[in-house]
Every structure is written in C-alpha cells, then in structure tokens.
Image 1 (cartoon, rainbow, N blue to C red):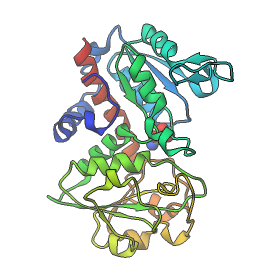
Image 2 (image 1 turned 90 degrees about the horizontal axis):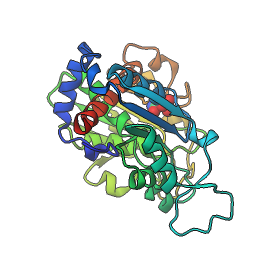
Image 3 (image 1 turned 45 degrees about the vertical axis):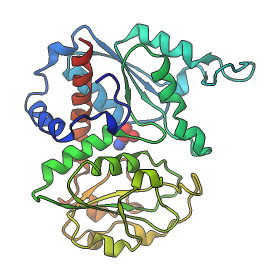
Length: 313
Ligand code: CP
C-alpha cells in the first residue's frame, strides 16, 4: 500500500483488525521495519489524539518523527495551477510537497474542511495537492471529507467489544454549537459498509450526509425508533451537507442520555462536549468505549504505517 487516503485503501478490513490484535500484544515487534525511516506529521488544524497516537505508532515501529504545525507556522500555500501569486500566498504546494519529501519517508497530513465552499472541500486541495506532488507515501490524518484512521480505530473497537454475529450499530447525530465537518461520519459510514451489521443512521431532517456516501444505508429520522435494540451507538455532530456547513438545529433533545442509550455501548471519536453532545452519566459509565477508541488510534496508525513501510522497504 503506497498511500492511506481513505477507507478504500484498506484491502481487507477483517484481516487488518486481526493483525492489530497481534500488534497490541507485541507493539514493538516490528521496530526494525522503521529503523532509519522518518515520518513527518503536518498539522493544518489542532489535534490531541491523532498527533500523539500517530507519533506513538511511528515510535513503536522504530521510526523518527518530525511534527510541524503547518497551519500556524508554515507559509500560506497556493494550490491552483498557473496562479499569479501576487496576493497572500507565499509558496506553492508543488515546491512544498517536493521539499518535505526530501526530509522524510512518509508524510501525514491533517487539513479539515473549511465548510465555506462544498466544491473546494470535496476537491481536498491540501491532501490531494501533497499527494500529487510528493514523492513519498501520504497518510490522511483527517481531511475535508474523511478520517480513515479514526474509522479504522472504530472498527477495531467494535470488533473487540462485539459478541454478536450481526450487531445493531446506530450512528446518531447530536447537537453542537459550532459547525463541524462531515469527515468522521463519512468514514464511519464507509467503514460500516464493509461490515456485516444492522446499521442505521439517525439525524434531524436537513442533516443528510452526502447521499453518494450513504447510498444503501438505512436512515431513520426518529431517534428513539433508530435506537431500539441497539448494541452500539456512535454519536457525532456534523453540520448540514445540503445547506453546506450551516448549523440548522441545536435541539438538545438529540443529546445522548443514559435513558436513550439503554444497554448499548457508547462510541465517540473525541473531543466531545459534555452535556451538549452526551450527558455525563453516559461518558462516566462502563458503557462508554471512548477511551478504548482513543487507545486504538495508536494501533490503527501502526497497522497503516506498517503496511506502508512493508511496501517501501
Ligand atoms: N478523534 C480525533 O481525531 O481526535 P483529535 O482531533 O484530538 O486528533
């Protein structure tokens, strides 16, 4: 595998999840694989989990790690072809990607959706710009439309906590004061499409995700009905896709409560706003898997880096 840009780059999800079990028992077993190799993590946006877990994964594999907060410390980049760069942008991604490629062996990039222009966000100009001009593999640490490292960690967490042949998994929208991107929800949906599960998406009307991504999925606007007999409830806010990037609804009745959760396990990618997205009683209960999910971020990154290192060694 050269790049890990989306869930599509996973050739066999169940095999990867099985391999992770072995990595969790012996995280340093493949330390020799990354010896003499360097990963550079470029952050155009904030992070806690992605930053530390990807570093940890690289260290477990024997790699050196360089980190740059590109969004605040790098030159403002131009992505368009043939642009006359006489405005605020100082450097073109053509040079930036080639320069970074000389310093390391793998490049990982975080660049969120700006939620101002759907077409621009869907073009993934940062991730695709670096992927186009870099001469080394690229890993997506959350782009405008996808968060495949998170979805892989979620798949691992589901596998570790599931005891049924066909569990019921519900993705439930939750209120939030800020407009958030669709990346986590998109990748979770794509990952669920690779699994044998009774998968239901629930959200208020107007919060439909990209219909090309949810094609074939069950969508239920009645949250109570959607949650009936759920085994896992994944809660996430996202802004409107149709009315792009807008907050249409902050109805606190959509917040996840212990009563609504019933006996199901609770999942969220974090960070999470307590008592807005989900009440304290859920997060503080044994039903919450959020800390396990965060821990599995190390192993989702580690399996991805291992596959890439195996392909470039
Ligand atoms: N879930 C996740 O990606 O967390 P961070 O934004 O803190 O990296």
